[in-house]
Amino acid sequence: MTKIGVLEKSSKYIMNTYNSFPIVLKEGKGVYVWDEDGKKYIDFVAGIAVNVLGYGDEKYVEAIKGQLEKIHHCSNLYTTEPGVNLAQTLVENSSFDKVFFCNSGTEAMEAAIKLSRKYGYKNKGKNASEIISMKNSFHGRTLGALTTTGQPKYHEGFAPLLPGVKYAIYNDFASLEELVNENTCAIILEVVQGEGGVNPAKKDYLEDVRKLCTEKDIVLIFDEVQTGVGRTGKLFAHEVYGISPDVMALAKGLGGGVPIGAMLAKEKFALAFKPGDHASTFGGNPMATTAAGHILDRLLNDGVLKNAEESGKYLREKLEGLKDKYDFIKDVRGIGLMQGIEVDINTGDVIKNAVANGLLLVGAGATVIRFVPPIIVTKEQIDEAIEILEKSFNIA
Ligand SMILES: *Cc1c(COP(=O)(O)O)cnc(C)c1O
Image (cartoon, rainbow, N blue to C red; front, side, top):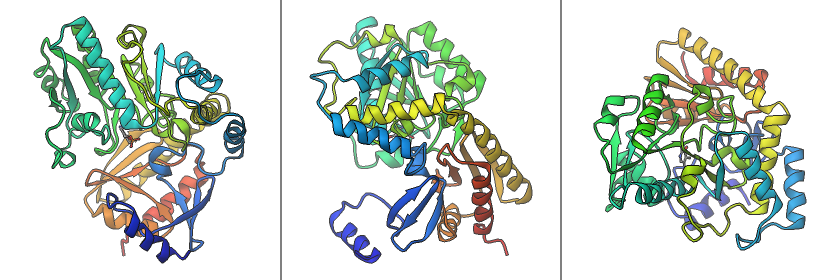
């Protein structure tokens, strides 16, 4: 099929929910992808912080293939080895004790919301159902996660939303404290707000929130759907701060591109769920957990996490260099291989130019360009991307 043919078919048959670029991607290798016309791109989007190992990683493909040939799915009526092994790896490399598997970020957040409500109900009484999340946050599109997403533009037309959700200002402890009462069951935040503009939390803020939650027996939920799984140079972004939540949501990078999400909890909180309280048909299926198991193995035992840290530092230096050079770059923010530049030129134009020049980029909020490449990215490849980016500013 021609590119135009594919795009026409897409607008005819696929529901109109995305502002996609007029590009049909065909294949990839490492940090590069090719479209139907044979045009090559260096990919600093990576499926939006998903393709940890980039494309076509041979060992990753082999691992998934091998599992597909054995057993790919069987529901949670039965147990499989890849699932329990992945849970063990997650627990042994984190501060959590139990894992619930699902299929996406929004589902991981739904699981976290339900767990915290059940915990509040059991420990504080039936009115302890209030949740506080942050303005400018992003937690997903299903109704519970959507409600906790503190951006009115995503709420419009979907009322009534989940009752009992309030919004505090991110990185402003006083605004959070004001909303807390005896019925607060959970506080939800991203360690680095992703979609909202690549805004890292301040350390003293996280410390204050952690202390407050412990004192008032409020479940502290970190949404690490985007920041988790090596993105920041640590396995989880909260390790950068040395502050651990009670519950954490993962997805995006976890399966390296195979859909999987997870909600992790410390024992005391995990105990709130009893059999029948929550479930997912696909959750933890052997194909997805094999993919995720392989990703974690490569991060922890094959130097990929270390690369994320080093390449992240290098990317940051390069972006700081651009900021010194160009007045329209107002800020460089982020941790590791999750970076953003805030600009006062049109981000859409820069991204469009970059795509035309062979670099895939994505925005974050209205004024930020985000950089979330595969975490196998090398310094040379970062140089290549920065060069294309500079060209794409279109400064005469
Ligand atoms: C992408 C994202 C989600 C939603 O994940 P989906 O897999 O699209 O449902 C939730 N939280 C954060 C922080 C995200 O970046």
